[in-house]
Length: 291
Ligand code: SAM
Image 1 (spheres, protein in one colour):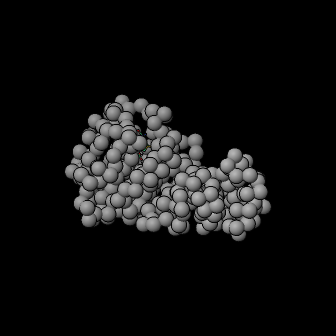
Image 2 (cartoon, protein in one colour):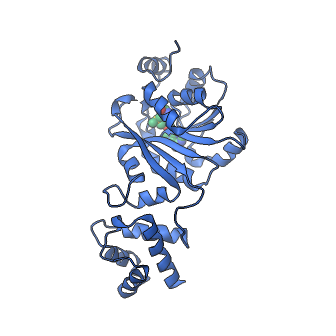
Image 3 (cartoon, helix red, strand yellow):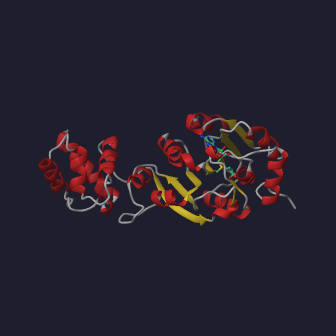
């Protein structure tokens, strides 16, 4: 019977052998539950024909499962102390490539091109460092990489916001930023007890499937996101009031009311009641009113 890295006893032994001390500032909470790891890999859709990219392999808990289930794995780790440890723990796997680099500074597209077959599906899979979840996901999504899906363990509250539906507490500008590029789904919630050390927050596995095309047609993407931001600026305010305080230097209150009417959207509504289609109509109407 093979002993996986992610069993609590094996993890403790590896940490002790290499005298490793956790760096809280790097979001180091390692997974010590093989079932949860298998669930992540299964939900990610990884298969022996596909390639995987991991962010933050730690001591290799998830990397090992990816090496078993995928054709090839490339893992980016920022903490140089972990590289020799990973070389040791993953020595039995020939299909893993480690890159000692901050993922935010990495040219992921180049890495994909150099390491994987162009016909191969690529999945990004990670137990992300929670202090930079959103910047990492936004970078990966906006880089428009040739990647099929992104499946990540993240803070539950953030996963809920990314996968939210209109008229809920979690729905906001982050929801739109994520769902404009991906189809987002919370796969499962995970208790703190599966990590070492345990984080202070609850976690969820979030799956993002990248869209070929945005679900709505917008005239100008930056302006669309500006309108969305403004609409959610103060959650208890009406759409009309939020838009007036945030775009008021460009458009007066009357012009804003007029544009809302042209768009067919009641300015007395709150931002959280608009779906992405309505935000697109609103942004395009504004854009055309000035253009
Ligand atoms: N994958 C391992 C697991 O599941 O047990 C470790 C996950 S731990 C939550 C996050 C990992 O990301 C740590 O190994 C940490 O050093 C690494 N990390 C933190 N910031 C990073 C960055 N900017 N780029 C790459 N890796 C980073």
